[in-house]
Amino acid sequence: MRALLERGWTVRALVRGSAPSLEGLPIERTGGDLFAPHLAEAMIGCDAVFHVAATYSLWRRDRAEVLRANVEGTRLVLGAARRAGVPRVVHTSSVAAIGVRHDNEPASEAWQSPPGELIGAYKRSKYEAEREVARAVAGGQDVVIVNPTTPVGPWDAKPTPTGDIIVRFCTGRMPAYVDTGLNLVDVRSVAEGHILAFERGRTGERYILGNENMTLRALLERLAALTGRSAPAVRVPPLVPLAYAAAGEFLLEPLGFRPDVPFEGVRMAKQRMYYDVAKAEVQLGLPRRPVTAALSDAVTWFQEHGYFSTPSGRERGNRT
Image (tube, rainbow, N blue to C red; front, side, top):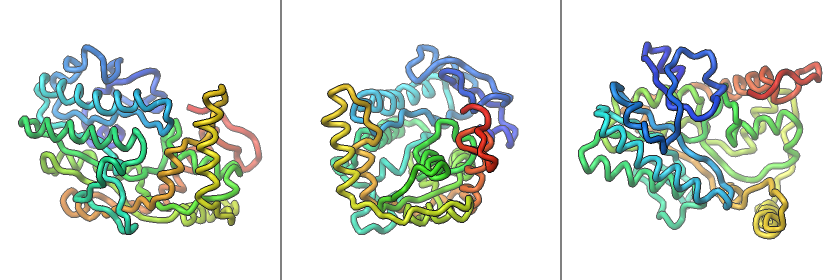
């Protein structure tokens, strides 16, 4: 949204709740969600719809809501945009829909794991949402798909799972790590990639918005260099978090306890989620901002907004 405003766009946003991260931005707000009856009406007069809304959860208890929001919600957005006469839709998918290669090599847009191998309701929902896009394109609608990897940077108010890793590291709550890998990208590159997809993307095609593949251990070492904290030296065997998560969700949650680690999240962590971003760089001109700088900006933003102590040891502000 900030990237659109910087380029002189007039922005109308469908907002559910207070959306504190949008405070102070000169945008037109329309209250509602993906199932609002006035969805098409809210899009009238728009040159583009950026469908970025989704429900992200790896908890088994949230499976129905994840599928409803991400699959049915996408179908409703596409239908509303078509009725409103919006020329082009940019659909925010995820590399979760693409899956991973078994040889741990980076996957491109051309790769597709079999749907049965996509772990958890979230990944399957993003895959099924892309099938909704394919049907819309077959019906003549102009839709481009972007597949962000793991964004990192400022304004991560919730925070995202990656932001939560940063917060836990900076508050000393990450004594060990698991052997996994991911692709990191500056969130501002992801925002710009959406606009580039609108301007240059080909109808019906995917574009991976990512940057650097690295292990979780490497990520923690970069955070250590930025913050002066020590990176955890203990690597946890995969079966330990898997057993812990399974006990929480399958045994303790039915008894009324609230588990803190989702079973599907641990299963995903066993995979190296590496991706090839060449197509977006060549066809869209996706920028490659340094990941270390994005991590530094994220640490600063979290600190300034009270997610962890300042160097003086005092807590600042409230979470936004």
